[in-house]
Length: 292
Image (cartoon, rainbow, N blue to C red; front, side, top):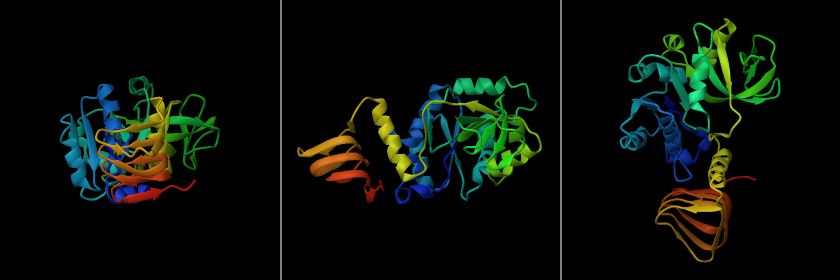
């Protein structure tokens, strides 16, 4: 299940005009990157929940017949969102992925790690990027058991880490989810206190939480760098001869006018940017300058 119902407040003003999970990253919307990774890994059933700018999400998913939409007319929280989608998801364990997270996680290895745990019931396995002891929002012991979430610690900690917003929920835990509430605050922390088996799957590859404007720009530049390119332009773009693109992405049908450098910028499809410009996101609604 892909959690995409949030309001995207940290990405405003971009999300005043576009659903958070549909902001472009590279050559396609952020949600498309997540769905493509899940489909490539062999997912046979995918559910996406939506609330903010619901009609845009519905329109986007119509072209993806293997993906179902779970509509939330009011926000239910991450736990409530999964609970509401129970019928669409079917029975068994479920992989949950925050729509604003881009990461090259080995999903087959994650699912295998969860399935091979000896704890009964296998409550959940959280994807974690390691940090120093006491750092980050989770802590684990030497055997990758989660012993701390936020400031709630139940045993000695060997490693700190960041929970990436990608996790496997066991079937037994799914059956106990509240109809409203947060998976971390209202589910994981309370069951951790009671001795539940929460495990970490350590991820050491790339990871972007595209929840802020700065991280949104960095995710786009990472997409560009991964292709060994210093700029990218979609179909139907027009860049005036006096403009130099330097680590810039120009979406389909966009225009770049003026002269000089367009550096570290993302120009959305159909938008117009004017050089010189640096460290900015240019949407059809206007320019958002990022502080540096």
